[in-house]
Length: 305
Image (cartoon, rainbow, N blue to C red; front, side, top):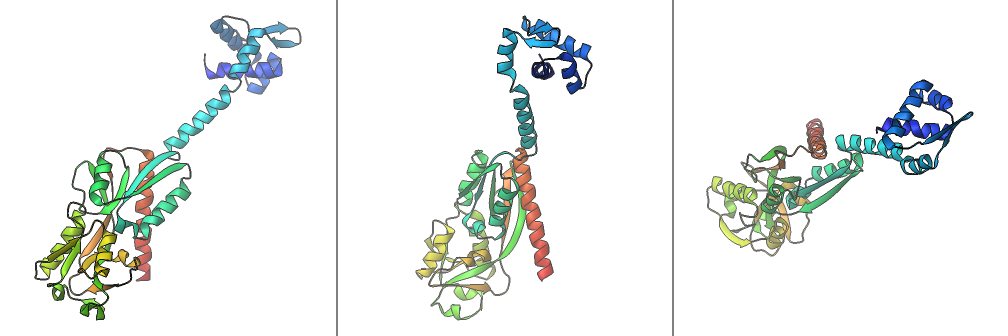
């Protein structure tokens, strides 16, 4: 039994006449009659009484109609759903991001634009540190993550660099160096350096420590902070200084100032990571939207500069 048999049957049932039903369907009356006979043979019972003025449903035909009358509509809905799914317009995606990535203007913009473009996609967001995000990505608990480039080092992970931004020095407001707009790192050699543990955010940790060593000193490691936001709060408590991506300057905390780095400025690189073997259309659309958004942002930045 094919869907066309159901359509033909329903059309004859509605019209009560083979000739009119054939005209509406767009085929000849003899082929339509043969299709109905084939259907009756397959079912094993007569569906229509052939009467002089047309055709009337038998009891079996009425019972059959009551069940199959919604089949064509359901088939159309199934086809539309399949096509939407094939285009990545329905489904779900789980996206993770680090605390510093959340402060990058492009990340919330990507979330907003994707939700507007694909309202049928259920998007779940999770903030966490780089190590936990990567574990969740590998365990297929997340589909894509925004993090600092360098955190992922595996052939199983595909990484796209999105944006580079300078690091800023975060100082207690009362620190003598806070009076300057630009601060040389070497002047902070005797101050404690506040960072998250390396196992939590290896890329950020390595960039900051490397910048201190490039400035000619081994940093004095101070209080370890559980997350980047805590780093800034610890600086406000005058426990030391730190370096953070420039976007973090949006986090205004009483008692801290953000200052530019004199000389060679360390850079933070934002990236989008996802599993190399993930072929989901929803993910492909998300990646494409993200890359296009960042290319557009770079063009706007070039024009403004």
